[in-house]
Amino acid sequence: MTYLVGGCVRDLLAGIHPKDYDIATNALPNEVRKRVWGSYVIGRRFRLVLAMRGDQQFEIATFRRGGRPEDFVDGEDQPVGDNFFGTPEEDALRRDFTINSMFYDPLKDELIDYAHGMADIEAKILRMIGDPKERIIEDAIRSLRAVRLSHKLKFTIESSFRAAIRETAAEVAKSPLPRRREEYLKFLRLDDHVPSLCELYDLNLMEHLMPSLNEIWNNSDQRDIFVNYMHRMEEITWDYKNPMEIYLPMVMAFNAALQGDPELEKKREIFMKDELGMFKAESTEVLHIIELAHSLPEINSFKKRGQRRQLAFLSQEALRYALRIARMELSLPPEELAFWQNSLK
Image (cartoon, rainbow, N blue to C red; front, side, top):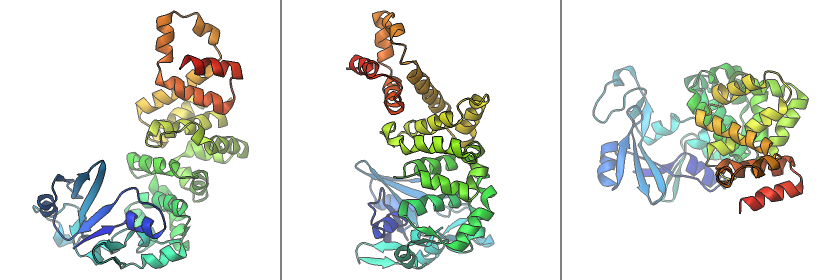
């Protein structure tokens, strides 16, 4: 048996076009690999099969269940750790949220719903499978995923689940920064990400995950400046697949909110590296773009350069981002903005 599973089923039922399609089956990974051409097995603890069709990638996973002590053996087709092959029902009930636990059989046109996820879709409620506090401690990233999904789907987080998120807020800071980074990028790709940031603050998550940003949120004037920049994010970020473009307005907002703070550079470094998880290359490029935007009024200095140096300056990709910033901040008179735009043609 083979079903569509998880987020794609959830999104279809919620009226959203899925970005990808995950597949679950009772076939073991090596059996899938032999039957699906162009596929290969990845992972050790979580063995998955990846298959490419055109430019789209499909993940094919064998039904799993929670492990028992006697299960912890390393066999050829047995994953090591706390994930073991099981039945569709066991697989559904080990997932995080009820709305992520549904299977769809495309051949029978049948929805398979062991955790009553469809009822929660209809009620627009995000509910944890099992005890919310225990499941968050098991994997604290679920708190971030819950906030993000509730805003993506316009759902309400079920009350006991919401209380558990607030109670275990400190747990999320113990999760690996690369995983948190991926969630932050998904937050910033939401159609309206500012309310989700506000909820991180309300649930005490921001205090533990991004204390530098939490400090801004505690100051109403600084928060208003930060939010104003984030509301205009689309004026700067055009490619939402590029993490650097996504983080650029956030760093700009941070700079603007803390303008005049003698410790701005130190706080910004902590915010970018330790809290957002930005890579060194991303941080360097973002700061270069911001610095370049501030140098654009120096047209006379540019004109004094030789032709080769002028061409090198104009060939920078960062210059195009800097012009987006100048347009957004209205930092250049129309004639100076026109000069740079014409120079780039």
